[in-house]
Amino acid sequence: MPPKPLSARELACLHWAAAGKTSWETALILGLSEHTVNFHLKKACGKLGVRTRRAAVAAALRQGLLGSITDAPGPHR
Image (cartoon, rainbow, N blue to C red; front, side):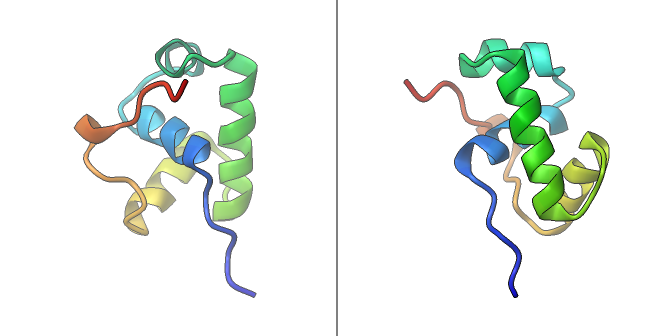
């Protein structure tokens, strides 16, 4: 079975994690709660088969899922 694709929110949270932002900072940038950011990062970890945020960022970068950090998405409201 092929891996599940990451959602737009999961990718957005990973982009900001890759840029060195905390969950709290990412929440402010994306207009979400810190809890929601952590939820999306946890789901991304599961889909990527890793346990930590750092490992998720590394896996996403290896798989070419993250573009330029300067292209990281902002709020979608």
